[in-house]
Image (cartoon, rainbow, N blue to C red; front, side, top):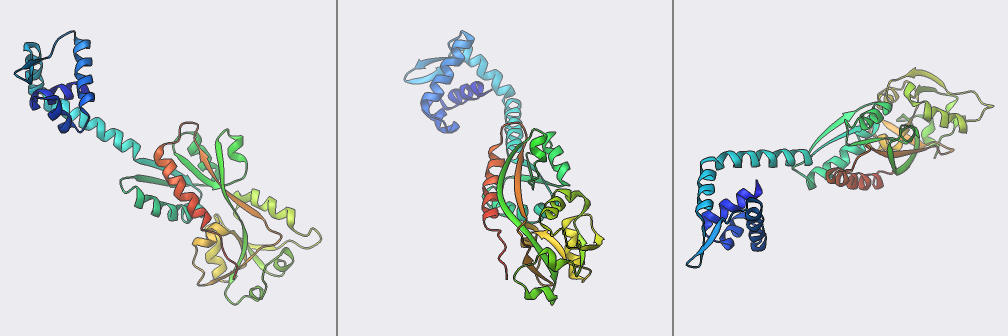
Length: 299
């Protein structure tokens, strides 16, 4: 297809130089393309005529055939270009809700400023569904909290940043007077519990609590981390949340304190088992910048 386009341009322009200018390529590239085409066909397509490059009889026949059909060839070339551009500028991301509606959105804002032609499909899924989407190559990138499960499924994982748990409470709560909150502080107050899918986080919590003290009483269990916030704002109980979702949530009705001993929460990027596209790499760059900017400062 490219050889025919170059041949057509040379005949129409009457010279290698003019053809190169019209195609926005170098003169040596045009000359090499013409020679390669002649070698493959076993025909001389051009001859010199008073200093100009003119088609031979065979070249004239080919040019006339192209004139009759060139619009079809051009339409095919344009379609291929559009398909290639569309594929290269589309990206699918699977992310868990606390990150997808927060830090991912922040990174996307900057990414789309750099790549306004890009088109992104964001899938908000539970953690295991994020892994499955990446494993099935239904997503170019997965974003989740690091639990070790992605590696067990044979996926490539990159840890990008670490945070910690915070205790959130309604404005005016007695625990506002403390610089940090521990297990001992929680036992006297009702709790809005982690969702059932966060056994990995509950396991970390179990490691640091005082076994000789009663466990905090969950009066409400919700189905997502983001659902903890409105119920805490309404005074139903205290909540433990990751600092990444806390960063993106309004603090108008909430106070927050770091939980001690520190329970670490890390963000991981999960990649499918194929080459990472340039578009995905560009987004990852912005995501890492957003991670560096996200640390919550204690009041």
